Image 1 (cartoon, rainbow, N blue to C red):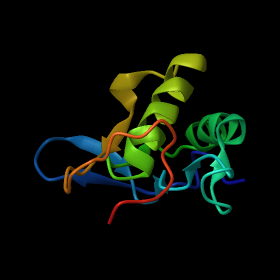
Image 2: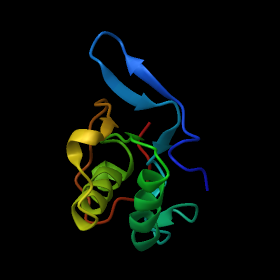
Image 3: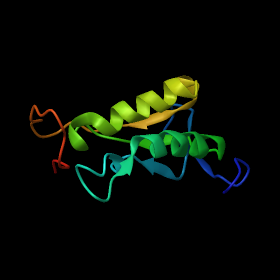
Image 4: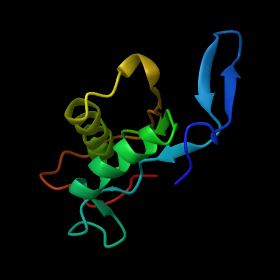
Length: 109
């Protein structure tokens, strides 16, 4: 696992925000009972912490990833591990209608 000294960062425009050049894609955060390639919540929680500890601070999610479940799981990881929100960059996208479902079953692209 790379350490934070191995991670390269870039400044985001003139904002001064320092973003890891590698983003953690959260599209796979979910449940295998919905899609067999999803990563279970318990595993994604610890994975998020490991990524942060390695120096990654850029996480990519969207409301269309299993109807927002990936973002909810990312939020749980931030809370559970008390990750400093001011040190995280969370990219998101809003597009397409979201369908009310008890169990999210698909990525809505």
